[in-house]
Image (tube, rainbow, N blue to C red):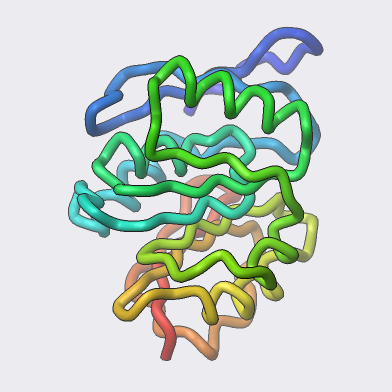
Length: 186
């Protein structure tokens, strides 16, 4: 993804790369730690998943720009729950969902770890892309393991590779400073 100038008040943009909303542009506020998953990485992830998510229930736990969650919805997910705690980001996600008429997307204002500790049900795909320096990925992985449906998978994106010994790494890749993998419980 090309670098976009990050000025206060100037939205950043990312496009949906596949599915019903292919080429639609999402904009998101410029905030520290908020970086969308690059096009190339999303393309790789959805190639790994077989392009379509028809009928699946997905969780985008640290939704941020919404790129992963809206991509999942665009590719046929029956329900996508996006969790984000920043009120400004949540407002933008709601605007994007309304513009896309994304009735299968539910946006929840909450702390990601608290959300997983609650009664949120089970998911076929859980998308974990917290800010790299936050330290949230290891506890999120541990809690997300309890929220996977049978046969479910977790996508994790990170800077430094966490301990994944409790997981079976199905696929792994990197792009620039980002590393990412598709996981299932070991």
